[in-house]
Amino acid sequence: MKNLKLYLFFIFSSICFNLASEDFEYEVIAEELSSPWAIAMIDNNNILFTELSGQLRRIKDGVLVQESVSGVPEVLFAGQGGLSGIILDPNFKDNNRLFIAFSSPDEGKATNTLEVISAILDQNSLINVNTIFKASPSRRTAAHYGARMAFLDDGTLLITSGDGFNYREDAQNLDNHFGKVIRLNIDGSIPSDNPFINQEGALPEIYSFGHRNPQGIVVANGFIYENEHGPMGGDELNIVEAAKNYGWPAITYGKDYSGAMISPFTEKDGMEQPIKYWVPSIAPSGMTFYDKDLFSSWTGSILISALVPGDVRRLVMNNSEFIEEETLFSDLGRIRDIVTSPNGSLVLATDGPNGKLIRVKPKQ
Amino acid sequence: MLKKSLYLIISILLATVLVVLQTTLSNLMWLSSVDMPVTIGLTFNTFFGDLIGMNSGGAIPLVGLVALGMLLAYLVAKILLIWINAKKSYAYGLAGAAAILAIVLLMPLAFYNLDLIAGARTALGKTILILCGFLSGYYFGSKLEGKE
View: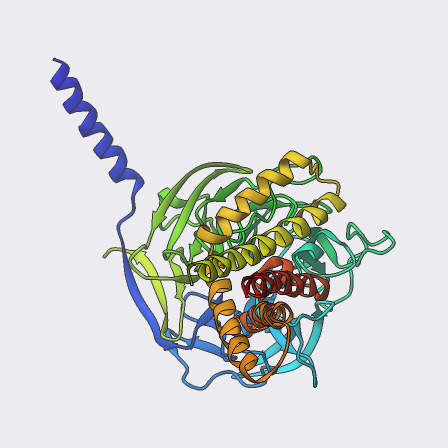
């Protein structure tokens, strides 16, 4: 009788497991790409994506256009710098406007900074290119730019700005853009309800602070989900709120690459805790909120692409509460970005000089 | 020869400990400045944690890096002392300083200007670390002088 119960338990567990997992297959959309970094879906078969080395590329009707989009500004392609985040205007279908974040070399200097432009896509060219944001001050380093973007429901644009590696303490000061989430109107002007707009000594673009290197940001269900690289350990998923301090580097679950402690503290009043953190690091990169039903058991999950060891983490959430984690697509290597197609398939960008765009769809 | 080797090892360990101490203290001083509750006990714990972490838990073991730099610098100092008449304490002191200078200046060149030793991110930090190298070399040189 006891064995029968055990047997039935295993059968039941096996059925539950099969229901929870999804049968999928990969379709390579494009390959031999130069470090694809960020993807923007125009529709299911028309895609724009950036290559870190400085090209804006296009998939047209499912086929890679060999010629890259012209009119892209000069970028600093070094270290972690290059052509990085891209996002389409919510009204892209009407106005063809898009936004690109990149590391921009300062003229005649050995410094660079995070810059965001708006532009209109006209055939295979960018026109009406305008700088809407330049992080201040510039940095000597070529690392930790952030450079991801998301739109809030009110039409304002959030931009993640990393701590520049060498400038980590500045993430706690409001007089600079290191380690911040920035909020702007799409013309670069500052929303009148930004949290620090009336605070003396604070930069008015700042929405939240105390971040390290935010590599994913997505707005869903009324929440702003943001992931960021920790140092050795301490990668985080946060829910970002206006004026909140996310603690870096005063509190952290990670250690420095030298092996030294960055902070012996992991919490403090007035500093926000992540809703999930990873030790050791997974090096989170892109992020999407899966709100489609093509993979019905994933609906309502956050999907985070990761560079180490290279997979996608599906986080089951109950709004602001993390429930459980599943590892997906661990056979593709380092994954730099993930987006959801309008039809519910997923599109991934694999990292590196021989990167690929891969669609994940239900197995036929 | 045995004593010289011992002095050399102590000199390398001294430089390593001083670099770790500078990293720990500069870090904790900043934490204290933003009202984090840094105590004496926590300072000792963090220092010993860093001593172990920076020599076994990081990307490059600090003691190995310091040993490599100092051995090269001491070798150059020893050769130069054949022709130059100078006190060994100062000559090896300068060699120790040069070794740390090379570490804090050359490492960022290999890593997109990133200062992997957190204490070396400011000019003051770099200066203190170079002084740590000088003290370690000075110890080694003065011991050699004493032996003679």
